[in-house]
Length: 431
Image 1: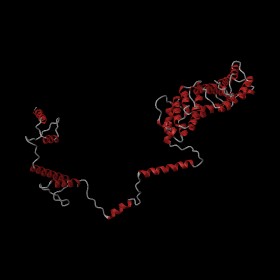
Image 2: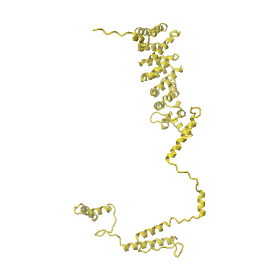
Image 3: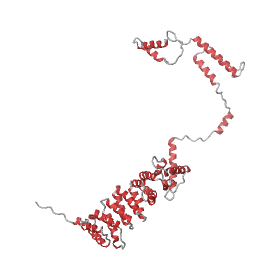
Image 4: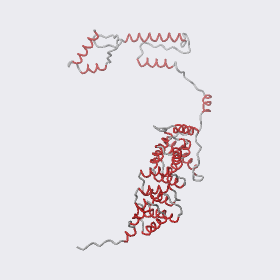
């Protein structure tokens, strides 16, 4: 209770306005503890330091105890002349006492070592005479760059084409582990090692370690999305042709329908239209084994997505020059239904494509007549008068009971492009 009263009195004293600034500063310098119980010797007035006579007695007692301990441990033997004992008087100053104590403590940890000439010669034999200069960070970076430059030059100095590199066994083991993940992948994040494949020079070699034929459909979609956005047109074309197209054809042949993820992969592949045309569409048609099911499904992807006119025009012209299959007519009709403003060169190529069948003795399928009807409906005003007469003559040789009459009607009511150019403009009427 007395302690609490004392604290209250001290708090009350600080709140008084009569307390001087000097007393407040001295108050703040002292550390006040509230929760620790310590017995302190306090006078009624200001605190006083320990008396000088008392401090001398304490130091003398401490020195005597230290000497007794050293005698017991054998460090200092009484009557020995090896190491003289220095007796300190009680009249030393503080600095002298501190230096003597430091010398006493340091002597316990090390001794003065004296080396003669023979020892110096022996040490010099193990020292490197030609010491290398210290390299800075800039020197290290330049050295690494020159090493990389020479490595690249040696790789491409032979035939101009990069050969298959020998992979580190650790890298191969890592991508074999990635392969096991990709075969069972359904959703979520892909391994980071797989995402960096498009940035590698030997990406094809690394890719085939993962065995794309064993990937899940979800993995194929994610891979197409990554490769379509990170690879250039030619590299994306190779990925589409070597990985995506075989997987789509295998899936259709086995299940008779395309997996949703693979269908989405086709749509993502259109992000690189040139790669899509050269890597999927044209190789599929040039193979000559494209089924109608494959043509309809891949054609629906083309119909539902926007494709630049230049890529579509090149694809139409290329398809028109191929040997005829039913799939060619399906893709031609889909491209023509997109209602592009095709250049005249493409229009002429499509007309010559149909005129090739004038002397064909085979009975052409309905797909061919449907493609011709779509072409006439969309581009009847873009053909010349000669092409119009040639198409009317074609209908006499190749006819369909319900479609040919509609084609003939469209051609007869068409205004050809050469007639529109040569037709004179009507003169303005005089007022």
